[in-house]
Amino acid sequence: MQHRWIAAIALMAAGGMAQTAAPVFEVASIKASSSDGSRDKTTPGTLLENGETLRQLVTVAFEVKDFQVTGGPAWMDADRYDIVAKASGPANDQQLFRMLQSLLEDRFHLRTHRESKMFPGHALVVARNGIKAQPAADPQHPSRNSHDGSLTAKAVSMAQLAQWLGRRTGEPVVDNTGLSKVYDFTLTWDPASDRFDPLASGAGGAVAADPKHLPLTLALEDQLGLRLVARKVPVEMIVIDGAEKPDLN
Image (tube, rainbow, N blue to C red):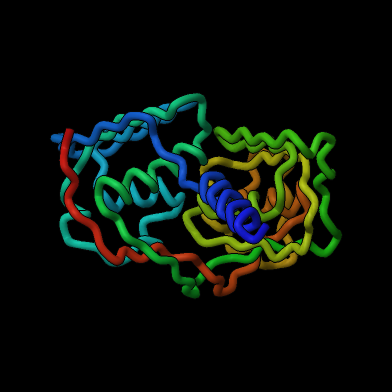
């Protein structure tokens, strides 16, 4: 009986390891690049990186900005690579980026750890009159479409909105709303004003007659009932502990 229990535990452990194994590409090619610029493209199940340095590849794989990647050898900012990688089936961007992490660990022998540092940034909070976005009609099917001063979101959390704002404005943004639901909303602003407006931390400014003429931060308060407050916020850093130049193929 004891042997049966040991065997069962071993099988359960093996099954757990299989379920948590890091996803990998089915095929991947890495070549030296002669490009002096970088370009990337994803389609369901395929990742193309052209003229990327290792630092740029790390920012893509971990979905962070340049300043969030520290350490590493000098060549990771100089040598450029072209990568063509394909999954075994359809995969979305987040799945492809996780596969890219595995590829960098395998082919570049990339070793990293994470640290948190405080940086000047903004906290997303609920404005004085409360949230204006509506709870999601279909929480199980999130989507987000953004272009030319317009964001249409369905079943999006405040944490996801904070991440989007950080990418859009180039500054760290954390969710301090305390809201756990997901929401449907449309946000419209002047696309020439993506950078934070100094009025964002005030009680609100004059509202333009046309919402398309509002700065992003004022549109956020006027249309969604949310504010951005300047403060130091924790930012996750990717620290490069080691990397090696890959074998090219």
